[in-house]
Image 1 (cartoon, rainbow, N blue to C red):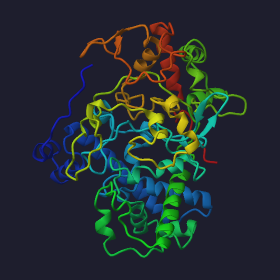
Image 2 (tube, helix red, strand yellow; image 1 turned 180 degrees about the horizontal axis):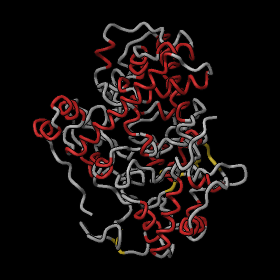
Image 3 (cartoon, helix red, strand yellow; image 1 turned 45 degrees about the vertical axis):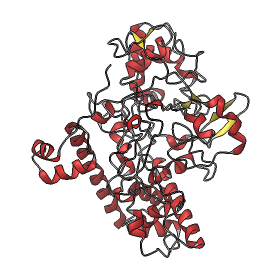
Image 4 (cartoon, one colour; image 1 turned 90 degrees about the horizontal axis):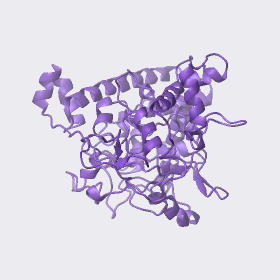
Length: 493
């Protein structure tokens, strides 16, 4: 597979292609350098974000009486709020839309850049968007000494530990707003200030207290918050506040994150409404192929060793919340490899350039150069860094095939190297039995595999030479497709 190059596009050509000059100007401003198809898909997704936001804000007129539902409504309003990004153009949901299983909703980006553009549209992160459906069920990051594993947290590298707020999903929500390659604000105070100007302010104060936005903002706060992060090392908190106001801002930022996590825990995202769930409840029956795939999943395929389907008293979440290095090859399609020079703001996202290696959990634990770290590292874990180098979190397989239409491209693995379920199942089966690919090898992904991005802590015990037939791989894929929510209507409790 030859990586697909990014295609430059001019505003004039794209305006003609869309036949709507105003829309074209808006979209070209969104992501210069992307193909017209990607631009058009981005525009459609943004229109859907705007629609959902408008519907959510309309609910503020008669908010629910129950405080839990109020928190969910607040969280949803913020999830779809583009004003919480530095250029007021990117909501959290841009990378986490329901029609794609709460991961990246733009097929063309999934097929080309893998990562999504940030609020500064020339900046991309080093990984594909991770689904946040069911993420609230991940435990607070902890060390299982018997297994020798870290367990829990959020993000591919587990860096949203949940140790401070007792909620990994909330700490995850605190990452993107001040991540320079995502929403790009220079200071958490900017997120709080922007939220204080939004229609949900009254509900926020009703839930969290009237003190939430009682901050003496400096006269230049709008100007400061319009400058993309990261802030300079000489002025790490560029919104200059009193000690008391800084404390109030920190508390309100935590409450914003807890509200978003509250929405992520709602029945909209945690549904258990797949065909698999229906089969467990005797409301559906798996086909012969799906059942064969499930048996392989639990047996010869060894999938269930990490993607656990539950045990006594457990919901089947299809992850054990540990981290592993399966030997995924590097993905040269990520624009992050080319972000090795100062951008227009002087920011260098990836000083290592093409030499960059994603060391996952190990990089977080060793205080490596991560883009965003919403949780502090427990100093007692520093000695675990070497044994976790190149490991990434085992994702849930729920909604792994959810897509808005059959031809929609989804990618798999932390860097999106795998472009289909068949491809990643084939990799699990044959990683160690097929030959190494040559550059631009036409057999890549079918008859050969590139070398792993890193061989540190490579899992050689549970995958790579499973001995599955082609038909058995297809059976497993058929089973994985039964994990898509929406087979049964999600019931509101």
